[in-house]
Length: 339
Image (cartoon, rainbow, N blue to C red; front, side, top):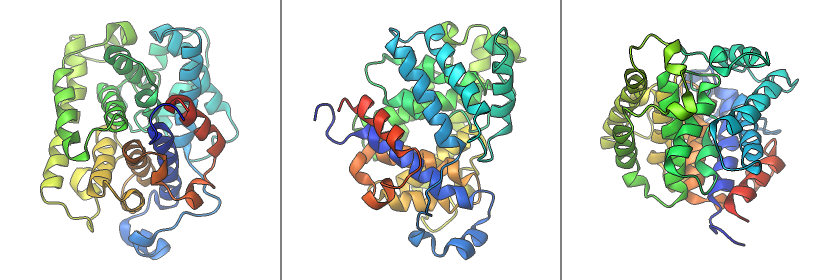
């Protein structure tokens, strides 16, 4: 085996899908209802078959588009936008797109399906739903990207559907968190590293990747446009830090960092579930799935973080062996782990 023997890409992708599947039957339920249906949260089991949602489907769509782009040459805006757009539209048209997909993704993908339309016309600049950062993990896992390319790619894949600056910033920050953990960052230093990254990039508008997207919103300048997004993410990190100062593993994480329907809350609450149990990945997934908010998206993010941190061996073989889309997830994991 070459590359990282932990296989962080494989761990992150399988963890993302496992969290998605574990949270699928609990989404739209409050915690008492989840406990009544699933039993004690620390004992929650994975249903059979282990069906995932649009979170994993769109992660794979992004992965396919990213792979195609990189097979054609160095990653660049147009080279990435074309195949990712095609994959998003293919997902929109697929009969398997029947897992309660988000409205923003559906509206934007319908508009992206019109070939003569520039992608900025499809982008929903008023939406900061979590649909963009739930799928961005591949950008953090693919090797050999410089920081500007990784950030621009993370924001562009978001902008194709979710063009709100907070969706862009949260996607960038989510990909960066996955990257840091895959490279061996300690969980106890992660929030500080993310805060430093957010602060350093607060006024950076990636013109090469986003072009004139900012003009589709109501901001006077591209810098003021993107600053709104980073400020939302920094505020979410404030709430995360406060929750970690006095952690309560038995409390619903959504009460501390938000329900996860919007991008910065999904990131913060997914991180909280992971950081409450950094060495207990299955417990982190169970905690994320037993939440009153967007349980599948929160759990898929927690799974991506835990898997990037601990690698492929984090997940019980009996669980990992029955996840939907397993073969494709493993294919991408092997590609990006250098196996």
